[in-house]
Image (cartoon, rainbow, N blue to C red):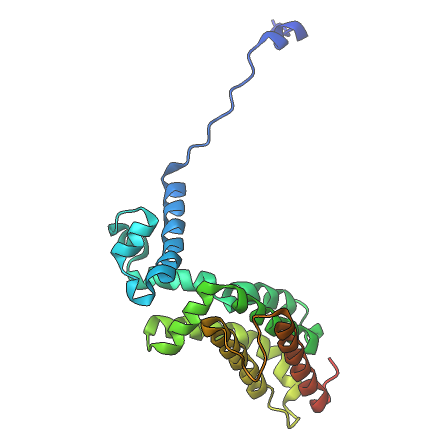
Amino acid sequence: MGRKKKSETEISKEPAPKERKVLSGPLRDKSRTMARMVAAVGKVIQKKGYPGLTAPNIAVAAGVDKKLVWTYFGSIDNLIEEYIRQKDFWKFEAKKHIEDLLKNASVIGKKEISLILQSQFEVLQKDKALQKIIHWELGEKNKMLRKVADRREEIGEQLFSVIMPDFETTNVDLRAKLALIVGGIYYLSLHSKSNGSLVCGIDINEDDGRRRIEKAIQDLVFEAYERAGVSK
């Protein structure tokens, strides 16, 4: 004999199945702790500067045992490198944009290059932690910082591999021009944020000053393309 089918009344009286509780578990707890430790690096830089980046200081800021620095990251340098990697403009802000552009490389031209550089200027103006990182890179010879800088260059090379063929037969050294623009972005941002002084009479802490620099970045990129006869 077949099983008797339950009536709708009987079904409605049955208790609803209980929702399964999602436990955090060791993997999620570890991930959260690691994220807290990475964020703590930024807190220590802000309060104590680069000399203060020690395992005890970071552990206190993160509210964890200092032994976790080695357990989770292997070394204090690895932990600091992870923080810098997450803050780096070219690693996070620009990388995704560049990857999207490379999917349709034929459209990459003066407008796209200009927007990336203007975005770098904007981010560096706002991000105090990133300003400190750049200061640190400029002021100290450090293998970990060199590794971060080299990775930044690798991301930029992806873009250069697409745009440089258009300039090979021209007398325009686009690499040198962009190097000067990037260097100018760093100097202007760090100089103005460190002591609030003017540069060539321009105050980039003011909206008008920032707009003038953003327009100058665009003008320089556009002029390089036009001089080379590249219509993109």
